[in-house]
Length: 503
Image (cartoon, rainbow, N blue to C red):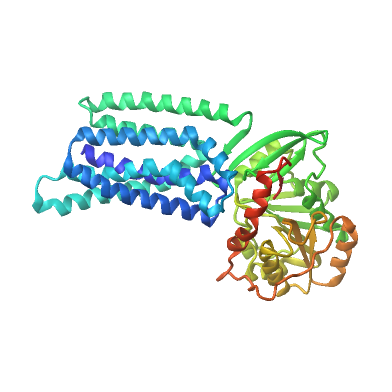
């Protein structure tokens, strides 16, 4: 029975380790399809190598002592991942590589060693269990079924609970403790004694890694949620004390001036707020993507009678906004913790202002918020004299322009009046910066927006949009377009001493 327990736990650890990998990589390399592809591909490759190598070693030396050593080595590799992940990822994110190459290298360095050893556990356990060749198929099948069930349990427990309850390093300490426990089960001690030793070891790992994480953070607040890994950092800039909310190493999702919380620090946020001036006495506003809730707070301050609905997929992000970014919710501000697309799919009440400012940790707009079907829903929800605005990070020309121009072309298919406004005058058409796409059902609101924002936010020209597709739920290569321009922008930021820009 001990072997079944060991195989079950090691299977659970594999999937929990994979989910923890995504959480560790996200602030440095993003959580895009490319990052997930690297994690899944590298871990599957590592497990395959482990299966092959473990089978050969088990035939050569099938002993419980050897399996115990493997489990202890796997635990050690997990601990090494926790200790060195910050150093490795900080160095790699500054390397001049494509994000796909960087994410593969990071996953190989940090997660392949433990995954290879974990892959060796099942074939080793199967070899130890084999006693009769006539039932070898059933024996191997049973052990691999137990391992798979463990993986399923590990996936659900980690995704639904552990990531919400513990930090990434704490989860790694827990996984290392589980592997230590498995190794101790193979020692010539009673199960109770082994369990006690494992508990003490796990507690020591947990406390030690938690303390190490605090030291490495250098005063940074590091928060793990179900959807994000959030960093909160304070700095002095131009005589102001600023607090940044990061889900990516090179950008700020939200910024607040601690000495003047009502100030909109980020230029694109000021641009989006200015667009509200185009609507005479707006009654209702919808903001998709809350983060630190700077824009919703500004709207409530300027229009006290207006109802502001905020759709933020991560409820913990709203808690962060309340605790660290001066958000004070009231009866005129409603919060909906769900995907923005599911909200607009079912909502029917008209809004005078609709803002879309949702980004994942890889600086990519979720594709389902920018497709033709989504734009039609925005159009249906917008009042006749209302204004719709979406924040993008792109250029108007060159490789970094495909994202902006494909979304723009999609909006043009629904709204008769559209314009793209830069958050500040660009150095060139190829410069990637925040661009706010604005649309309305008639020309008058858009003319009012242009008058309100003035020359500080110039209008951009469409370039090369004819060759781009209209984005649909069926086909929307948003991440692909973003990847073509963002790496160069990130490389410039890696070598710059400038402060992180907005997202």
